[in-house]
Amino acid sequence: MAKQTIFMTGAHGYVGSRITENAIAEGYAVVGLSRTEASDEKLKNIGASSVRGDLYSYDVLKAESAKADVVIHLADALAQNFDKPYSVVVDIDNKVVDAITDGLKGSNKTFIVTSGSLVTGADPKHGETDETSPLWEEPLNDRIGCETHALKQASKGIRIIALRLAPYVYGRGGSGVRLFMGFGAQAGELAYIDDGSVQTTTVHVDDAARLYLLAIKKGKSGEAYNATTETDVTAKQLYEAMGKVAGLPVRSQSLADAKSKMGEFLARFVSTENRASNAKAKKELGWQPKEKGIIDDILTGSYVEVAKTLKTPTV
Image (cartoon, rainbow, N blue to C red; front, side):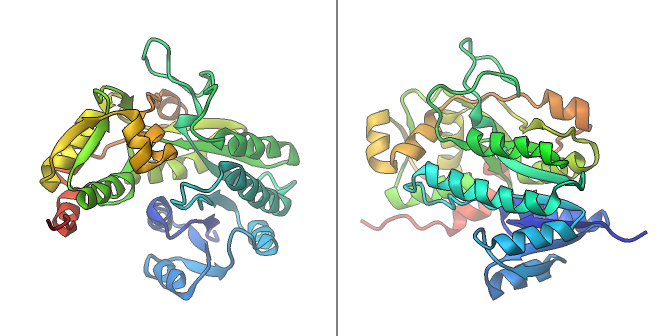
């Protein structure tokens, strides 16, 4: 039997590279969208092939999707440019989805899109939320617009599934934890907002990668699944762990001060409650997260080496 081929955007990125490696280990062939020769080399090193293009290469997106058995869309138009208006991000993402689904229409092939658990509002009683919970009235961004647009494309005869990643995807020394540790090193301190009691949701990058592959096999078309594990980690716990491993002082700051230093987006990100349950993914997809928790990974795992590379400002 011939290998099934997965076409991916973001295949060599933080989450995408882990999906790629796991997919190849399971017998899939992976083709990644690649903008540069350096990206080609990254894909080659993890066992994937590449095709030249970017999020504006609509003909390439359509053609590669038509050839593939499965498509996974991971590339993020925001790309840590937090000052970019999110309406621009939504427009870019929707056009990517349109191009991909033009290539997939009528095939009943699987198309997995990436969303975030922050699309749902916090529970008024601070309990866990699920995929049916009400959306934020004043969301951090309009990511739900991307998700909704994508899921509507199921009417084209495509099996479309959305995975909502936790705000804190961590592990292997990368992502937001590394970013905030770097900010702290530059500032000479780390600061959470107010009393730091706000709770957030996490997922290890390896657990998230395994969920994408389970969604290919078992996910229901038109459905969203939370890719989340811990839901009770507080901002203060996160910052104190980062401070301890990096040797940085940790203090409280007001939301106003945080906005002036970090900008509106990041300040709201670190102060927004999110407690998204993974019960649906575990029940319907058979997902069993198994990696160490975020605090443990910061204190004794992959972020120990990250801390050694950080340079604090000289006085």
